[in-house]
Length: 323
Image (cartoon, rainbow, N blue to C red):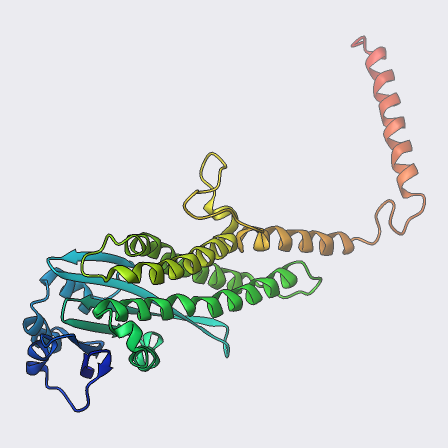
């Protein structure tokens, strides 16, 4: 469904409601563009938007079906951008992922959201309070949305880091708990987070270097700031993945950054090793009546028996002519 439909002109949002069939014409006014927001539209709901702005059918299909890889594609004079959002839920230590698809044209912005994790209400209010940004046109909306998506990755980093440290402590503790399920879930979240963030590097590089048509030239420095932030995020999450990012030859993948620490040896391997060490300690402690534990003469007696057995075998072999 359509959440919002408004016109921004001369860096300011124009008052009043705007019908969809009036949107394209309103966006063609001088120094103006229309901004439409949709939430989980189906094909029928999105068809009127597609016809109003002549959106490419392949991009429309991606926007409706969702579950897309982050990317930036250009169709004629329209830029299509797919973003993956991530929100860390403190209450149950889980991650909620969402998606945002943006159609950026000379006179319009169409934003399609999937899942509540991708809410843009605050972003819209923030950018509409910045006439200095809105003067750059629809590209300013792309910058504002990208900036918010990447900024929201930091709470994810902090939350995952805390969870991984807790798992490391649990793995190497003397407690009888089994963190295998939590390790598995954490590993999946880290992998999915990496898949959400890392592919943004290439689109941001193009935006920062002015290689995307329709973007105001002065926006390049703004996109470079987001690019720097994203690089730090990807390097950190690559560190969470640890040895999983090693290539067959043993060298780190240059596109993913060098891991800074093992983090329970890739969350799974270290957990297995730590649990095995823990189990071995318990197994050893279950034997109380063995040499060198509670029986003082056990070990010397075993050595004596071994020596006598060797002497007896030697004499038997000599007597039978085998030596």
